[in-house]
Length: 110
Image (tube, rainbow, N blue to C red; front, side, top):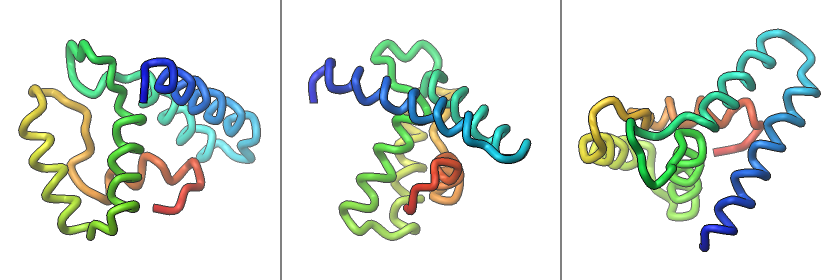
């Protein structure tokens, strides 16, 4: 994927989050979407020059997990390994459960 495709996907994700926020029926769901909007603009790790964002990176990893039939146990191990490789203070989820919590307000099945 090129930079233009990444930018289009990021803009589409932001628009989807804003649209979902307008459809929230209760305060709890609204707060979840607010957190997702924050994660959408939060860098994956401090001084991330590549511009990787917390939400987008988590979604990409979960998509990879699903498309390759990776078990939760193996995915946990992968997350721990990546987390160790990234700089200190990174925002990568530490477990499959944590990663899935990020996308649950989107209504995605993972």
